[in-house]
Length: 382
Ligand code: SF4
View 1 (cartoon, rainbow, N blue to C red):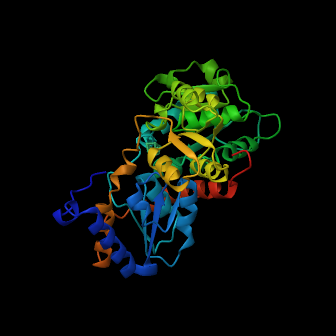
View 2: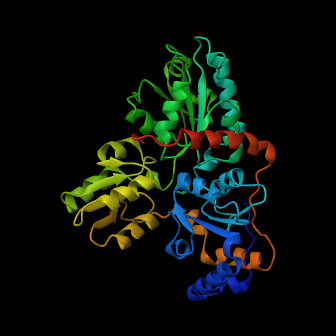
View 3: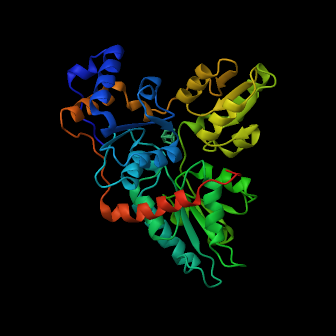
C-alpha cells in the first residue's frame, strides 16, 4: 500500500525527540490506546509496546482490551488486518506505515488460490470438505502471513489459519476431520517451508507425500498422479529473511563455537531445519533461550532484531545470528519511530490516520478461520 511521506517535523526529528513525543502522546491517550509490537521490530519501537509477541500471541493480545479505542499495530499489514477482524467494531486498528507489508504474504493472492482450487477440483474430483464419503477432500490451511481474503477463503472452505506456533496442531486438526479410512489432503499456503517442516515432523515423507504448487504453472507444475498421491500440497512461497540461512552457516558456527546450540525458525528450508539442534516458532525460540543455562551458546536462525535483543537481554549466554551478513526483515523495519509518533500525535489531535479496515464480507469468513485457529490452540508437539 502507498504511504505518503511524513511531514518534515517527523522526518527530521532526532531519536530522542521522537522517543519523548511518543511517550507524551501515549500518556495523553491513556487507556484509549494499546500498542502491539512484533518481536522483529526495532528496539526503539519495542520500547513503547504494551505487548510484544509473535503473530499468534499478538492476535490474542489484541483482544485483551475491549475498552481501548485505538490499537496501534507495530508489525506488518496482515497482522493489522487480523487484529481488525478479531477486535470489536468500536475499535480502530492502525498500522503506522502502510508500506509495511510482507513479501511472503504477497506470494499468494485470491485469484491464484481460487484458480488452484478449481484445477484441483477438476483433476481430483469433489474436494469440498465434508465428513462423509470415501473421496479424499482437501482442507485449506493458510499461514497467518496471508491477506485477509485468503483467510476468508479457508474459512469458507472449512479450513483454518495457523501460525508457526500452532502449525502442527492445525494440521492434526485438518486431518482429523476425515472419517476413519479416508486420507484427506491439506492445501497449505503461502509458506512451503513451514508446511513441509511441520509435515516432516509429523512423519510425512517430503518426496512421496508432498507436492509443490507453483501458481504460475498449469496444475502447479505437477502430474495428476503426483497430486493424487500427495497428502500435502504446498504453495511455492517463502520468507526472504529465513531463506537466507544455510547448512554451511550452521557448519561454520559449529566450527567456530564448539558445542554451540543451533536454533532455527521453521520458515527455514528443510535441510537447515534438519541440520539444526532445535527448531520452532519465535515464542519457542525465546523460551529456549530464556530457559537455557548460563554459559550456554546459541546460534539462532531468525530475524536479526530479535536475535540482537536476545543477546542484550541474556548477557550470561553467547547468542549470535547464524547469518553473519545480518538480515533484518525489510518490511518490519519500515515501522520507524517517526511513523509511530505521527499516528499517535494525530490521534491526540482527534484524527485517525492509517486505519486498517477489512470489509465485513471478507471479515466474516476470515473471522471463522481465525477463531478456528484460536480454538485449535497449541499442542505440546508445536
Ligand atoms: S520475516 Fe518474512 S514472513 Fe515475517 S514479515 Fe518479514 S518477510 Fe514476512
